[in-house]
Image (cartoon, rainbow, N blue to C red; front, side, top):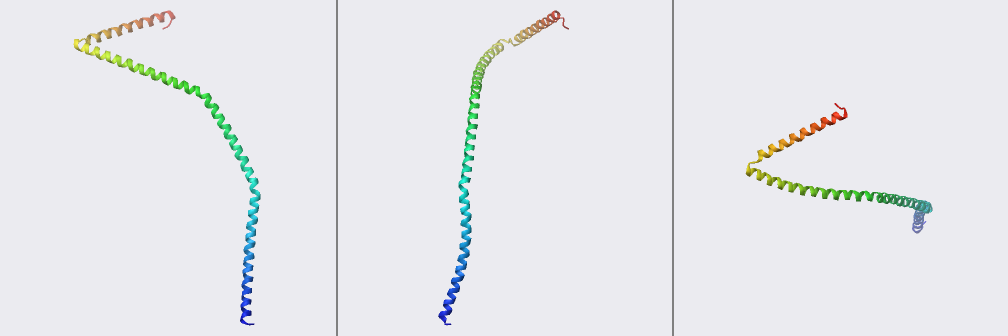
Amino acid sequence: MTLVGVGVLLIGIAFLILAIFLGHTLNNLAGILGGIDKTVQQLPKQMDDVMKETGNIIRESNHTLADVNEKMEQLSPLFYIVGDVGNATRKLTSSLVDVTDSMKTKSETGKELAGKNNLGGVYGSFALGYYWLKKRQQMKKDRSEGEFTGGN
């Protein structure tokens, strides 16, 4: 064998090793492509299942939203009533503030007048006498009601 023959033999062995390596690689690639084929074949069924579930979720969401809207419609009058009560309370409170301010002004004026004329003790005496009179009348009324009902 000459050198050319040895070179051709080495090239042949290299091609044989290369062919074995490529065969093994292509065999692995064929297995991977087979797995991909199975996955792609199952994909339409899985997509149908996903779409069915998505449709169910949308239907349930619409039902829930309709239920919430119905309940909100039922509660709307209550909110209007609460708002009206709030407005009425605000108006009453502002009226009471006005009355309180006017009474404060009047009492301050009366206090100044009483202070100027030294009538504070006289007004206090009249107030005490009035309180005792009302208390005595209430006690008489309570006693007379007790006698009519046969109570103690």
